[in-house]
Length: 223
Image (cartoon, rainbow, N blue to C red; front, side):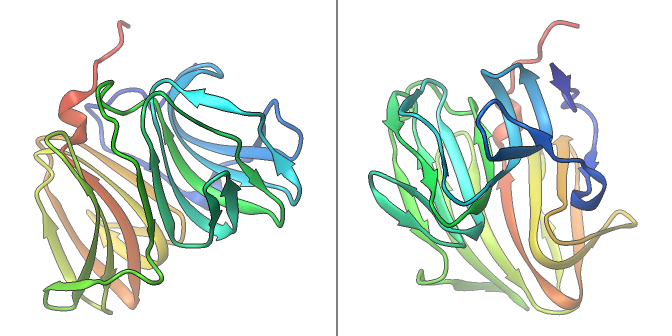
């Protein structure tokens, strides 16, 4: 499968316009944002777990990165409530579950193969930093390949970011206006290498997840 696999194009996927698709695991559904591959794939996905659903133990050969959007996600390391950000690097393994149900944004097979950095951050208890007028930032991860943050934007706040290495933005809540498009809750935007990013928060403000720099390192598949 190849879905939104042209990384040279601006891509916007609206949560409300994207259908849920059943996964091979009972009780687990997906909204696919981008994908190259079948069940083992380079993928960005919103995944919804019904209460009591679980995966068997598995190893992440290409790494796994996720943000908990709703409910509580679990594995051997404990419970990860709403707002938790987790990176499970290549070669790591776990047995994930959602006893009370959960929804996550997850990215698979997008790590440097040599990355061994594990990250577990609860954004609800972490320290945020004022970085610009009307902007608070929580650093989630940074290395030579990419920078990952969460930001809180006050109503009407204007945000310009370096998107020269590509950019992904996921609206956790609130609204954002970018290039004439209004993005709402759980909408996803991807900008290609060389793009510019200038956005304005809506009347209620916004909380967003942002990744930059990483698309420089995408290997483009053969047509």
